[in-house]
Length: 424
Image 1 (cartoon, rainbow, N blue to C red):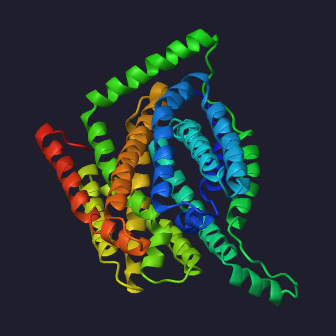
Image 2 (image 1 turned 30 degrees about the vertical axis):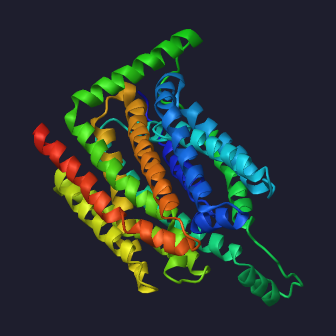
Image 3 (image 1 turned 30 degrees about the horizontal axis):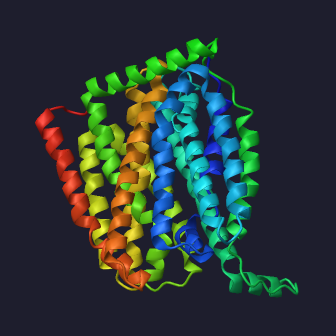
């Protein structure tokens, strides 16, 4: 298999442009300000997760057969379409159905990229000492993504604040007084989706694609079965995915409601970007630490420490202390960055080459299934608690997260103990 070092900078650029979205710092309040209710917003997240669950593994298996490059290009093209719908969906009766379509396309884009981009980049490295080289790529990725998220969080939150935009326009001598700026983060993300698509067109395929359609589909189906059997037999991989999905689901659920949490602890809207950018910069610290940990510590030790950090952050979020409750972003942000590094390092090192994208897509399937189920439970919880005050409802809901996480983490620990499988 030939090495294609030119794919590495393209992989970094694709990840940055695909993931650093300007609307992230105001995601929760954006949907609410467009006219949706909290249960509708939670339901949209479930639709997004269900779409990924349905497409994750088939897309990964297809990538192993027709080529990883094609799936990454498809992901970028879907991003352009989903952002166009999001940016121009009219407020009114059509808003919610169009946003459902947006979530479906977004989930399809995520599924198409998941596994395929990592497998393409990993196999673009020279076979000699590939694992060590991949760790360095992951550190570079974390730094580039941290920088990009820093900019996207600041700019996205700033352009959402009409008062701030008006003051900047006044300082520049412009006679412009914006009444609302709800869509500006969406317009900016739509603009970055175009170069994202262009970048993917420059990838070079590392593996020759299959031939006839029938043979391709049969091979993809066989790869799904092979990948599932391999994961079931490799107990360390099964435990790794199980522990990862518990930590990922709870942290991601909290981050989904991050802007609502900031409002709950009485922070002004303009701070969303500052906090989001500060969280992004945590990747600079987390990546080199995670690289040393995977070198010097075992996977069980790393995940035990990770679970403790997540629990600490969730307890702090449940307290929702006005203003100073912002400290919870540090442990949760570090945990999310470290988790991403751990999983990419271990799974790429352990997975067979011919089903690597398929195995990685099983990780995505498990994570989004866990996130979707937790999202359904959280939506039901918020609906049950109800009340006219959304902040009070969110606060009462957050109090359930620490004990729920502790229970799920305990189940993982019990499963690991019962299996007697050591993850080295």
